[in-house]
Structure formats: C-alpha cells, structure tokens
Image (tube, rainbow, N blue to C red):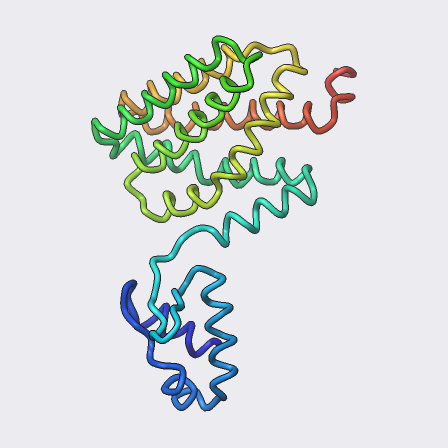
Length: 232
C-alpha cells in the first residue's frame, strides 16, 4: 500500500485517476488482489473513491480519520478530555493570534453570529433544544476563529476535532454548573476573545483564549470528578 500512498501524496492531485488495478499490480510487483485490498483500505480512509468498472479517483483530504481517532479516545477514557484541552490550547491560542492579525470583516461577522447564537440559546438552558443550539454555536464560534486565521492547516485540524469539541463543551458546561458558576461567565470570556480579535490585539486575543481554555479545564475536572469540587 505504501507505493499507492506515495502516488497519492507525492504525485497526484484531487480529482485525478489512479492507474488501473492491473497497471498498479505490474508497477508495484504485487498481485491484483493485493492492490484491490489496498485500495479498499485507502477508500475507507477517505483518500480514494472506488466505482465498479472505473479507475480509482483521488479525493480531497478530509479530517474524518482524525475525528474518529479523537472521538474513540474520549469515548474509551473520558479523562482524555483533559489531554484534549492541552491540544486545544496549542491550536486555539494560535488560531486566535492569527485571527487578530488576518481576520476579514466577513470572518468577524461569522464569529459574532455564532456568539449571538450562544447568547440567545443561553437564555434558557433548561430547554434541550436550546442546549443543542448553544453547543452548535459554541463549536461554530471556535471554528470561525480558525477560518479567520487564514491558516488552512488549522482549519483542517479543527474541523477534524469538531465532534471532540462538542463532547468537551458538553462536559465542560456540566462542570461549570457543578462549580456554581453562571453561563454568563462563559459568554463574557467568549466576548473578550472576539473583542481582542476585532481590536487586532494578537497578544490580548491569545491571552483571552488561554483564559477560556483554562476555565474549561477547571470545568472538565469538576465534571469528571465531582468530589474534587465539593472538597474545594
């Protein structure tokens, strides 16, 4: 499979067609069965599209494999959410920093719209539909900052972390309540991040995002071990 992967990553562009199974087998010195099985694996990874009677087509890379790894890790060990917070810190502080330098007017509006959605939904979090809306907008806010950064690699990675972000936010808001804190504090922290981005204050945006994730980490600890909250 490494020979086919080399073609995908080093030679071919999305939309292009791979050689036929017979040609690949001849070029790589393996059987057609080996090639067929390798292509199935690559298709499962979202790298090629297979259609009966047609040559495999190279796909645009997507973040589904990355998403699956993180989602599975958190499902197997909820404590991994604290490690995930460290990953978020590395990525999102950089996203906020770059957004403060490069955000367009439309990117800032997208972030503001997501924040407005959070505020609207937070008016009554006893309603499951509003809770759903709140988390959707929270994820959208963080994704919008990645888009505003202008860095395609950051966007790709954070898109792959969307499901894990959602899991993290759901547990974080539980811990926030256990700590006796109001959702207004979360909204204020998000407003501060966006205000620093709007002001083109890269250092301030980074510090504001660091504060967001620091608070989220405390909330996660409370959600994962409620005893620690009662003893503090």
